[in-house]
Image (cartoon, rainbow, N blue to C red):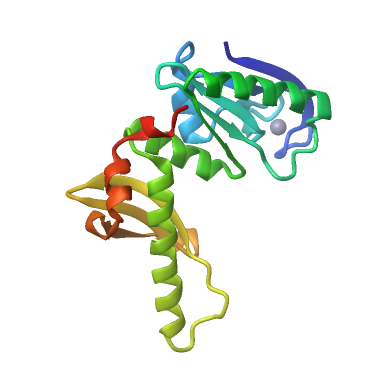
Length: 205
Ligand SMILES: [Zn+2]
């Protein structure tokens, strides 16, 4: 079941008070139409009754895929609404799901939630992808240091895109306006990582 709640907030465009819906959990098996909205980052979109412009509030939520047995939690850093009791009952629920063979991941950024969805939809092991991404980032950060005149403290963001022809393709950027694609050769993975890459089930209890 997908759960949504109502909140009152002012429209960011015209400042009129609006009653807005936001989801606390999304079950993409029972409500497959919501998956597209999640991937687009438009899960909570609505139209202002005053100015007719789109309002899209981003809030933390649970992403539940019963078919693939995946539970992803988006916990935004500035979300202070979760109280102790709520957190405890959530933890109990997660433990039960993990016992039932679920993969559970908690992420702090929306873009990481979407990345996890793509990784698991591609039947890949996200921990192996993470390892490859860490190495890709290290290579990029290192090479950018060698470029003269470049600003210090460069920090590349690396996101999974796809696997193809024995390569893992990542989106990489410092600024989103300068997005590039980089390929990581799967032969550079350790033997264990290679064996586990196409086996997300090894992550289950
Ligand atoms: Zn408005």
